[in-house]
Amino acid sequence: MHSDRAPLGLKVAAGLGLAFMHLPILLIFVYAFTTEDKSYQWPPPGLTLKWFAVTWGRPDVWQALWLSVKVASISTVIALVLGTLCAAAVSRTKFFGREVISLLVILPIALPGIITGISLRSAFNLADIPFSFWTIVLGHATFCVVVVYNNAVARFRRVSGSLVEASMDLGANSFQTFRYVILPNISTALLAGGMLAFALSFDEVIVTTFTAGQQQTLPIWMLEELVRPRERPVTNVVAMVVVLVTFLPILGAYYLTRGTDTVAGQGK
Amino acid sequence: MTSAIRFSGVSRHYGDVRAVDNVDLDIAEGEFFAMLGPSGSGKTTSLRLIAGFERPTAGEIRIFGQVAQGIPPYRRNVNTVFQDYALFPHLNVRDNVAYGLMVAGQPKAQRHGAADGALEMVALTGYGDRKPSELSGGQRQRVALARALVNEPKALLLDEPLGALDLKLREQMQEELKSLQRSLGITFIFVTHDQGEALSMADRVAVFNEGRIVQIGAPETIYFRPETPFVADFVGSSNVLPPEFVAQLTGRKAHGALRPEAVHLSEQGHSATVRSVSFLGAATRIGIRIGDVPMTMLLPKSDTFPKVGDTVTVNWAAEDLHVMDRA
Image 1: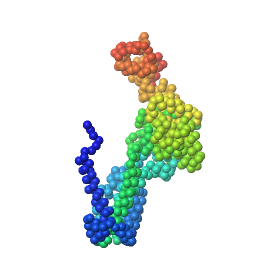
Image 2 (image 1 turned 90 degrees about the horizontal axis):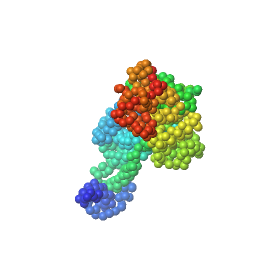
Image 3 (image 1 turned 135 degrees about the horizontal axis):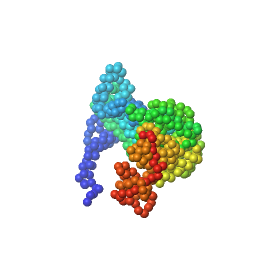
Image 4 (image 1 turned 45 degrees about the horizontal axis):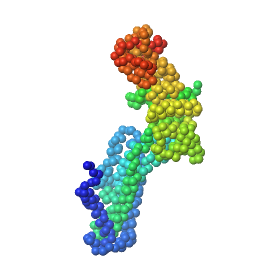
């Protein structure tokens, strides 16, 4: 007889697999509370909340956090605008080289970050652009656009083309059609894409190391802290915050795009 | 008569494909006009040319006397009922119907009132708060109709509007569309591949084939006096008789059209072999062959029918054989 219940062995294996992936993250959380600050000693000799206060008082943490939030926000906005426009062009119109453009847009996320980083660095050098906040933003936007584009293009395909024609037919100009028909139908996809883009940018290290000047985004700051140990648990506190800040948008994106497999406007 | 839509030498080519090819057309104001043809014959493209979704490659379109060139769809005084209805899935029925008035800047109370009025006209009172996904196919079709009509267009364009409905609903909607058109008095332009629909609803029918109009006329004319073998065959499946056979009968060497119901069993006439017998309910369709000319005849209800393989004698009134002088 066929059973819907998994055999015990499979359950154990699955449990071990999940534990292997997630226990180390839990470990990071635990070390945020340890009383020992030179090396990561197991088990922690004692637990304390003082590192939260220490972290709160460290201006370098705040600077890095603020820079990361700014970079992620601006990259996401750029990605939303460019990604949506590009998705609209690729899914709504036919033109020579459409497939090539589609591929070129997706390429940055398929390329290893180090290639993107090196090529951007040499390009900035060649063009005599000084490394600054904006070079980080540009670097991040290259892969943020992909995420938004992918989400938007999938949704654009589902929104039936006759909806746009119906809107025009009923007297709406292009702007009104975008505002009242296209945007409401793609908004959840854009929100999901935007959240993913934000999360990607927020914990990006590789491209940032190549495109940043003296600035430290939060992940870069963490890397430096690990190399140069001083009040080590502060890094763990920050790591906890990063996990939460990036996890929530990804969870949100998951829920927003879930259950939208029906084609909008297909109704017959 | 005042002209609602006029095509002068209108063509729409996509590369080598002549979707619409040098079409002349004059649709009168208040007319119920059908564009009939198989898929790919140019009828839908013609409709889209009127709506403004396509631009002609050549020729001129006038909508109520005004040259349509350069006028975008949203400034044309015509509205479309789309084949897939194209209702906005994120809006409820009332906001769907009120959409045209909303983008025109009408205040909420006023446009919602007008929308409810339009819904009443299509017998959907009380459905305003539902989402399109909660409606049946027939109801969506009515919403699409109300959404177009609430803008008081001077002409309504309907693109295969009944195609997705089942037979009974389709017949009911045909009646309703007809009476709606009569009471509103506006021009209806109706695209269909269903010759029965075109014949029963329209004042005039244009038969499209390969991007051209092959015949325009009243339904009776199209049905009884087809001008080409294509029209004879496509509109109500007439028997298209080869010129040699017609020459023997009439002395004129041209294709002939003979309606299946005009052929009957007879004491004297042509000897024929029965090839197939299909019971259709009200009538029975019998495939026969006179010499090497295949033909179908439609016999009304009767007690006895010939069987496959029988030899029968058939005949028809001479005036029922329509000789088509155009090839």
